[in-house]
Picture 1 (cartoon, rainbow, N blue to C red):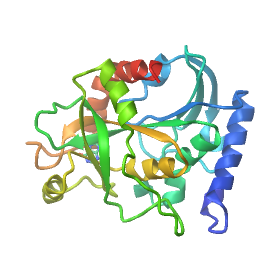
Picture 2: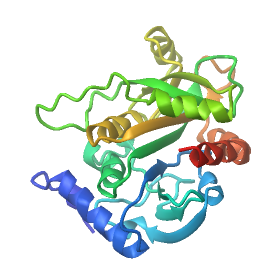
Picture 3: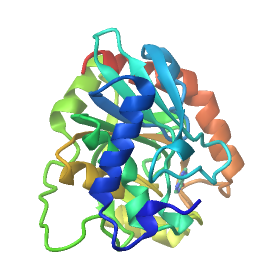
Length: 273
Ligand code: HPA
């Protein structure tokens, strides 16, 4: 089935609105409060935060695509939090490197806003540049460098990104774990990992974490008025910082190993939102 977002004449916000309607119908929850996109290593937190009200196949929701990446799941879950708030777990991330265009990449952010969410939590697995970060270290994203040369914003719409990664939300996260470090995330297009020279460039430009997601989704979230919390799991030291070559299998293994710990951390952060 073709994706309605691929029609250049379609309005991506209208499709996000349709997606939100389908989620409301299928979950029976008219309005959600917090949306989460769970990257490598973070998925278990969905099981810890509350009672799952509905699990929806992403392929049944307009604009979403089945994930092509091994280890990534494709469902949308509606979860009732102990606070009475409703969380929407978007398990169907489309990466920019899949080549389907930016509209599909940011559809989760736009759907979250259309579903009523005020907060968007974006998580990922990434390469760390700081040598003090052992594989499995969670890091708060303080800012980003969008190195994709793309933007989700179409037309002359000059959105301010000064405080894109909410200081308020980072401070809340630090009340749960005061040892949480933070850093600037640099989104590369991928899907290849960076070269050591590119990692050195990223470092000299002020980045501390390199990955292949999140920045574009965060920009779209901000455009739609969402407050953004970004968390990376440093699954490995970035290329050239690490003494050994990188492999997707090892990245997934590091994510799995850290998963119980960081999922519990995120679940606790969510109780404070
Ligand atoms: N680079 C880019 N993306 C990643 C990495 C990395 O080193 N590790 C996990 N995702």
